[in-house]
Image (tube, rainbow, N blue to C red; front, side, top):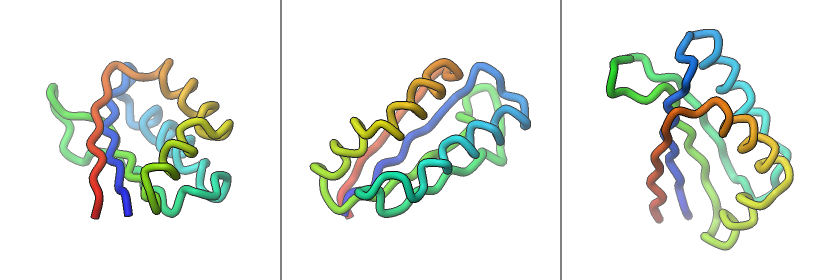
Length: 95
């Protein structure tokens, strides 16, 4: 199984905007067959160097993750999130 962790730092760091982005991310649930699980959580310890959200996604294989990345539902979300991002980082690991 593959687990991908994406850290998101938003341009607008207001609690309302963070919650909106979290809702958008979780909206992919059930729309992409290869996406086994999705979790999005807001950071409870904000600070200047902190990221605002973490997105955790799970896939059966790297091929499934690649399929997810080009899925229309993911691309729609990625376009919206891309406009809201200041910075992002990710770590993908096999478990």
